[in-house]
Image 1: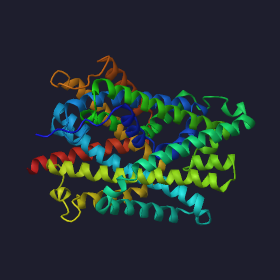
Image 2 (image 1 turned 60 degrees about the vertical axis):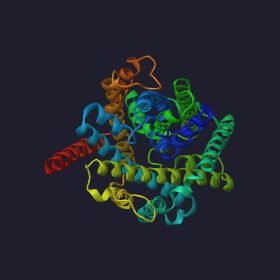
Image 3 (image 1 turned 180 degrees about the vertical axis):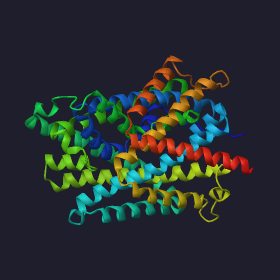
Image 4 (image 1 turned 90 degrees about the vertical axis):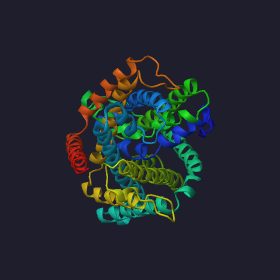
Length: 427
C-alpha cells in the first residue's frame, strides 16, 4: 500500500497551523471577551492557549498511531466503542454547524458596519449571513479545490493586516496611553476571566491541524512538538498584543456587544479610509476562508457518520459530477441557516467552545485508554502529567461557560443518545 509523502518540515507545519488558527476568532470574539473580563482578557487568552497547546500534543500522539480519517471521532470510537464515538462525532457535527453560523454573523457585522452602515438592521444582517452561508455551500459543492489555491495568499494577508493593526495600535498608545483604562485589571472578578477564557478558546480552534499531519512530517518525534510550540507561541503572542491594544485604546465595557471589535478600535485610532478598509478586508477574507472549511468539516463529519450507519444513507451519497457529498453539504448548510434564529453570538460561540472542549476531554481520555495498545511515531512528553493537567483545565473552562451553552450542549448529548439507540435498535 502506498504511503503518504513525508513533505512537512517545521516552517511548513508552523505556516499550516497559523493558517488554520487565525480566523474569525480574533476578529469577532476578542471584543466580546474583553467586555466580559475587562483588562484581564489578556490572561484569558493565555489560559486558552495553554489548553490548546497541551491538547494539540495529545492529538499529535494519537494521530501518529491512528491514521484513519475522522480524528477525535475515530479515537474515541476505538477507545470507548460506538456509542461514545457517535456522541463525539455528533457533537463535532453540531459544533461545526454552530461555528459556521457564528462566523457568518461576524462576516455580516464587519461587512455592514463598513460598507452598508446606513442599512444597519437585523434584517440585512441575517440576509447577508444567509447569503454567505449559501455561497460557501455552493463553493463546497463545485469549487472548493479552486478556493484552496488561495489559502496561502489569504494567510499572508491575514498576518500582514493583523501585524499592521498591532503596529498601528502601539503607535497610537505611545501618545495616548491612559493607565486608568487598565485599572482595575479584574473589574468583574477572576471568575469573569475564566468565563472569557472559555469563550476565547474558540479563537484557537484549528490548532489540531498540525497534529493530524504527523504521518506526512519528516522526523515527527522532533518536528511535531516544536511546530506546535512555535505556532501556539506566535498565535498567543499575537492574540495577547491585540487584546492589550483593545482594552488600552478604549474602556473595556465599550466592547461588550461589539461584533466587529478590530474595526471598532481602528476607527477610534484613525479615520483613514484605506487603513479601515485594510482591517475590514482582512476580516472578511479570514472569515470567508473559515466558512469554507467549517461547511466542509460539517459535511464530511455527516458523511463519516453516515458511512458508519449512524445517519441516514443519503448523507453519504456522492454527486457524480462534482464528486462531493451533495446532501451532506446542503443539509449542514441549511442547519447553519436555521441556527441563525438563536441570534445571540456569544451563546453560539460558547456552544462551539463547549462542543470542542467536550470532544478534547474525551480525546485525552482516549489516549489514556489506548496508551498501551498503540505504537505512535510521536510520543507525548511528561505522560501522564500533560493529559491530567489538561483534563483539569478543560473541566474548569466547561464549568465557567455561560449556562445557556451548557444547557444546549447537554440537551444535544441527550438528543444524540436517543438517535444512537433508535438507529442501533432499528438495525
